[in-house]
Length: 128
Image (cartoon, rainbow, N blue to C red; front, side, top):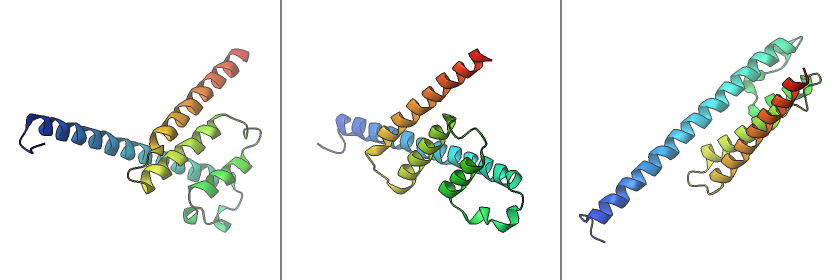
């Protein structure tokens, strides 16, 4: 295929569009995970009696989330925890693997967990 052919230009444009979508996805997932981590930081700072004894800033996402889960009285079975873990898995895949084939799988898994959590929340609201 010649580089000046219409087919080449079409394929190049398609590749650029795919790349742009992937870059946008990466940015949005990483931003979302950072917002969740910020919320975890705030929760831990308020939930711990003496937060100065724990280096929250030095922790990565997983230990922070596990600590928050351990402190969440009667909320440890909330389906939003599954969403949180799925977001973190997707973020790790996107951040560490440039051309991972697992990104789509992890995105589908996150979507499923989110829909499950929404359905669960609807059931809780109907009971109240």
